[in-house]
Length: 635
Image 1 (cartoon, helix red, strand yellow):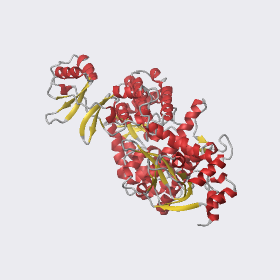
Image 2 (spheres, one colour):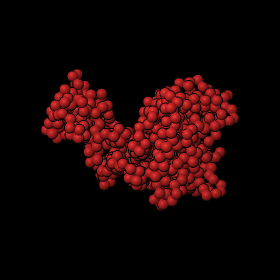
Image 3 (cartoon, helix red, strand yellow):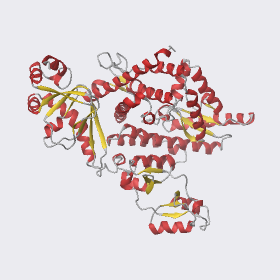
Image 4 (cartoon, helix red, strand yellow):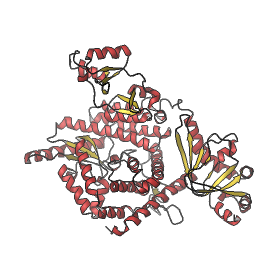
């Protein structure tokens, strides 16, 4: 091993780059090298303490911990120039986290004696490790895992760490469908439960009756209590798996406007989880916010709720929730708010002349909203049967969509500057017109068509007759098949948005203007990732619109996702979380929200992670370019 080669390498990575020449030479003379094949667990949690500090020369490792239930919690990924084993080295008693090679990996090994000597001699050396490894990653995660019950004043942390099975009612209270309403009510009263599972003659669960059903369907309507209970049971049954995290149950309750969810394990009904269980578990935030929305019947009542939603984001962030979990919760709550505005509009204008579906696209369509974003919506309505019905639909939706647009503005959703909204007649059309739009964009992919495709192909049905959106999605997938010219031209467009990383792996920032020395995390970071994932999904005929759900759908079929899917997901989570933290900080300082960060303000590890995310994007963009270069023509 050449000493000069070791000195040159260490002199380029923190914290060794802060040491003088003599110190580097001393390290190089006392360092060894080892090779770890992909998949090898180099250090195992709770094993005896490591005797070496390892510096990654080539390859990469995953840092993870296992909870008492055997759940793997990934803390970090580290690559060339990063170190591991520090905590084990100074902790002396045991290894705190497992380290596994995710690629064939070569490491330099610095023994404990020399590592401790460096820490005693060079304060900057010690400070780096304490800040980067101890405070930022391990300590916080370790504390999180061992203090699940000590949640922050009824906060949301417990939502993301507790399984449904931990709190679900274990004993199923049920009756058969031929029981009377009165008999069912007696069973509920006797067992002191708020819900009752209804079984058919084959002992298969076919419905659920809740105390709300008894109030609204029996008492309020004067129904005969001798009627069969099956006449008032709720369908369809909404289920969660016992191993799901509780936040998944919250999402389903919010989405379906229900208060009880069945719990299954291995396909067998095991219990019921209620909104009361979750409210006791987590206090009031997301579920109470959904309830607040449901209780409003006017735009004036809805408008003040926006600020409360932003506070929920702050709480979730401070309690360590993953970016994808935050965006799922917020998207569901935003959906609920939009649906309420639509209900208010329907009450004002009456039933529409034809069935319709309100669709969302952009970040809302992908369920990736954080703080309030521009409106990105449209209307698909059923093809009118007569010219008179067509004219009536045109008049109705023209007024209806403007009312909804203005109502959403009042609730904190600014209008889209490019006018991609249902209030624009171009984006309020019958299903047949939408099909023509999509077909024309695919078969005649000029620059304008490609731009509209990038925006509108992320659509999802949000309210109304959702079958209209599902039919349009099927039509899109069917007509994309074998459209290599369209895909090549789309690849050409999205490959132009390269991450801001220079030739020598330095950040490329704005040279002047209001954002001098900053880079745009949304346009140059999240944007390329979203574009890549969307491109793969359209190429593969995937129906999902959420970026992470698209990755999940392709994890066993798309060659690049099979190889790099986990890294793509990690990059997406990291950049999204960085962006949310930045905007929350601006909000707390009462500054206008933007997507620009100054890389010099990031920690060394954050810089490293961001650079690695950008390098990953560049690697995938180059692979796409190579695959489609024959058809890539300038738009």
